[in-house]
Amino acid sequence: QAAREKKVIMASYLKQLALKKKQEIDNTKHIEEAADELKTHMSASQTWLTEKFAELCLLFEEEEALTKSYIEEKAQKTLRKYEEQMEASKKQIRIIDSFSDRIRQIQLRTDPLYVLKDYTTIEKEIEKHIIPAEQWAAVPISFEHLANHFRRLVETIQSILRKPLKTRLKEDIFSSLDATLKKEPGVLLSVNSSTDRSLFLKHARSPTLEFDSLHPRLTLSEDLLSVSYSWRRRFYSSSPQRFDSLWQVLSRDSFCAGSHYWEVDLVQAAQGWWIGAAYPSIKRKGDSELCRLGWNRASWCIKRFDFEYWAFHNGE
Image (cartoon, rainbow, N blue to C red; front, side, top):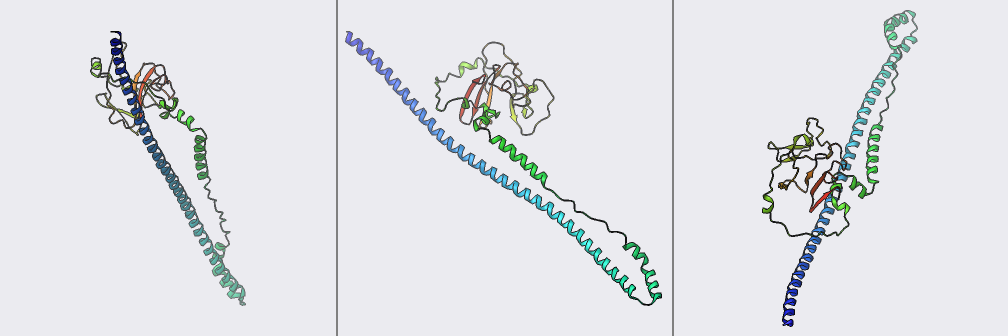
């Protein structure tokens, strides 16, 4: 009897071990898939980076060509003005030489009457010609303003690139939202099976968005249920509730207690988005961590960037 009981127990253990083996096989499969996705993503990111640096090189080459063309145009226009003035001066020299020859010819006459007659004829011309010529000095043209402009541009780029890449990523508003910066490579998360959506629908809500908190680069739909981004900054009325640096907007509805569930359609949100919940006390002015969703004690955030999803609060 005791042996039969042990066999039953061992059969149960074997089932549990088989289940555990399947879980480990699934873990291996998931990690292999993640590794393959990482390799693909790494290659795609490097290719994208190569393309962007190539675009940047072309942009600088185009800027160089445009600036040289600008210098050439200004210089050639000035040289043409110089040539016109030199030609005018040479013309005056020829006129002076011709008139001087006429005076010398009169000087060579031996008959006093003819000398007086010819002198009287050119006397008014002499008065006009002996007026001193205007002295011209070429105003030097300088391209120092261009040199100063590009010197400041180079200094700005150099000051940025002197900082280590990790430091720059942490200081960047959007890059700093990537929670992977604070994690060691290869971190694995323990996950549970997904919960049935129907369990949440009994707590469903449909919160509308608050116009007074809307950043000027964002636009609300008429029903106040959707928000989109625009490169053109809009001139919204000034409001102490409005985010002025971070592209965020809060809900008009607030919940003080209970369970609440809502869904957000992110089909057109491209590669990145962040949504969450916040206390009304979250700061609105500036781009410090006190204003960023999920980076302070007053807010929580769920975020997607590329192929990664993160949830964080107070910067963790």
